Length: 470
Ligand code: URP
Ligand code: ZN
Ligand code: ZN
Image 1 (cartoon, rainbow, N blue to C red):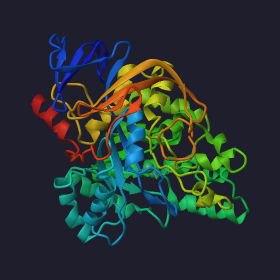
Image 2 (image 1 turned 90 degrees about the horizontal axis):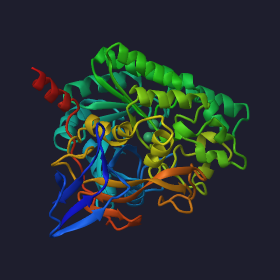
Image 3 (image 1 turned 60 degrees about the vertical axis):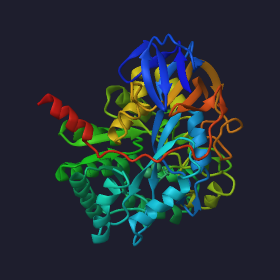
Image 4 (image 1 turned 135 degrees about the vertical axis):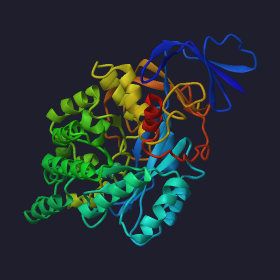
């Protein structure tokens, strides 16, 4: 059955206007004044914005990490995402040395299939570069539609790659049409500082932040950017947390490097003092890079506003406080790194960003959806409201006030990192390919309705633009 969304204000990355939407067969069929309401379900969006569904480019669902497994899987994680206005997630497929890539990808398909309530894609973690990996990568891109590779410069002896591997990945990605994503922290320096802190008897959560200084992030970001320039490749820096890293991204871009930056809600609104909470509560705020001194928040907001950082990911990587974060009670380096953020990513950005005048409404859509779709090969199917696009739609009331709490959230974890924070603006209804997932704030979706997304190669859009200009 057709659906008509009436009386809402449509917001895209470039425009804000009043119009109705006609949805059919999972797509947007028409935009304008829809007169005939026969044989259609009419949805009244009066007083609401109508946004393209959010795209979360950075999630870790059902991921083994830190001696345990992230609490939210593809079912609870995508339900929570939908409540928050996100209709697509791109999750990191973790690989192991010696394991064929196709096996790792199959494992990730098994985790998601039959569980996801919204559409999803995968990035591929690169854990080694050798002949068999190089042989498999073209098929990863062309058959699986996985067109972004992740390299970790931190987590020594777990995920960490050396510079040779990063450089080889950058060169290969350029040849094949993939975007390289990097966790930029100097893992060797962090390893040294961590051992030193523990030797000196410093075991509390705050030492997680003190042993991962902003200089370690700035240095790694600058190094990755230089190597990208040298390889004439393309780089997306995930979870940028501090001024040191932003400076390196700006510098590299001004030198012509094809570099992009993502930050996360936690770095915009929380700070390092949260790790000092008593009774081991600081462990709830242990993720990497760590929360920074408050002065960094303005730098991140300004970088989003000026376009020097382009996207917001959640870095959803949730662990219960009880039984999981507690693994590090006597040693901060054993606290599983990560937090539950997928549900509140859009609300926080809207409330703290748009409502407080730090970014515009159109920038909000660009940062949470459109730019991500463009960078990761999903545009124009996802990331915008246009005829022919998937009918992934968020009907968002900008005036509702609510208080974030673990008592009301939909993630599977026992705490919320933003507990008690007041936000203004909330998704009322969320549609994925024309079907309600959230209707009047109730979950009405179904596990397994989310579809796997094969993504286009990096740079396809730029190629179209260049052709048109010729
Ligand atoms: O602490 C974090 N960020 N956990 C998830 C893994 C990563 O580094 O992105
Ligand atoms: Zn990371
Ligand atoms: Zn992450």
